[in-house]
Image (cartoon, rainbow, N blue to C red; front, side, top):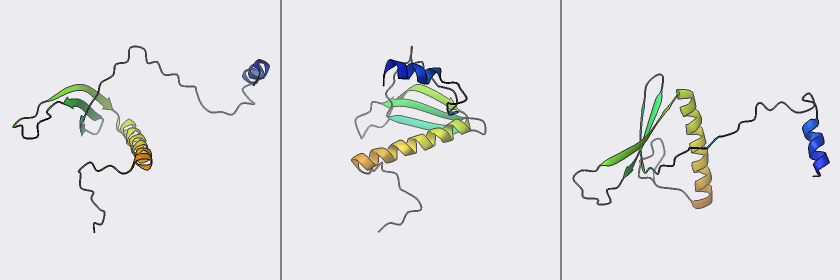
Length: 113
């Protein structure tokens, strides 16, 4: 596409462009990264709390396992549901590409043979 075509498209009146809502720009300046291999979830009527941490206990026979918590995310129930849908979608895509994951949790409501 030429520069003139791009300018013509951006100069088109708003009435001729489809209404798609506002453009969202994400600002990741100052973002921090944290790895988590543990997650705990609690909730009340007003919020869902996700607490993430790191389990460094590599020994299976340890009498006590210490998990260093490093992040807490508090969501509204609506945001939590949207997150659940997004996570379910990404896990399905992952399993389609790489195969089913067994996370060691018994599935309820499914017949076993």
